[in-house]
Amino acid sequence: MNQLDQLKAFTTVVADTGNFLQLAQYAPRDATTNPSLILKAVQSPDYAPLLAATVAAHRTEPLEEIVDQVLVRFGLEILKVVPGRVSTEVDARLSFDMAGSIARAHRIIELYEQAGIGRERVLIKLASTWEGIQAAAALEHEGIHCNLTLLFSFCQAVACGEAGVQLISPFVGRIYDWYKKSAGAAWDEAASSGVNDPGVKSVAQIYAYYKKYGIPTEVMGASFRNIGQIQALAGCDLLTISPDLLGQLQALDAPLTRQLSAEMAQGMNLEAHSYNEATFRFALNQDAMATEKLAEGIRLFAVDAGKLDQMIESLR
Image (cartoon, rainbow, N blue to C red; front, side, top):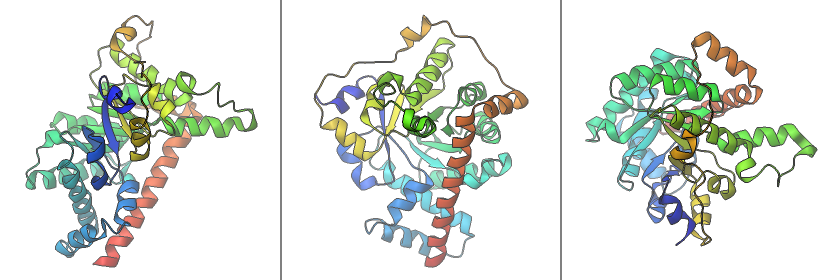
């Protein structure tokens, strides 16, 4: 049995791609997208006609509404392939706008429902800012489930759990990137890999805390740089993995050992935490890595959202 199949025995595997034509060969349960992945997809000859057709059908609508039509159209295609859920992201430029994020989420859900897809098959992706987390809390209260992304710190995870969000996506690879860059020539790859990888350690801490305190929010490790990070998080609730790394796992037959479990977490001595807006902002501020990577992530997604806007405008 290959390692991808072994992983599926104790972790839900999610495909991290906008390339729905590639999904079937890995048989993931769910799929996640973001503006960067959609932008990459629509630049491919395989998907350019889908973008053009969607824009043509809605060319008289406001730009942001056409964007949502495009995102949902990709989501609908993905849902033909995966049996579970698709994550569709609210524009990163609304990351500090709670009301704007809620309004955008409502429209995305409405478009899915108009296409016959129930809200139980959609996760609204929001950045793990204070405003994003509060928007998610309000949406969850309405039965609209959320995936909180760009999550780099323990305080973000605790706040998401307190808000009752459905799922979080802590970014393993970007945490690893920051620590590797920060260490410079002193970085020891061998000593900082596997369970000692700083990104892996962050997700393992969050997973253990949630299980210890019975927090139902799902933990989905994301943003992987290598399969060693994935192997070290075997047993996490979900892992969202790029097609390239899914292929690497599929090509390996060595035994895969479960690393995380709720039973192990129960025996850990972990202090309970709670945050209000002021203490959350201070805790995030005190974590240089999380502060920098959250800001950078929002900027990068906003740039790609702007590029997608330009592509759509050129087709109107």
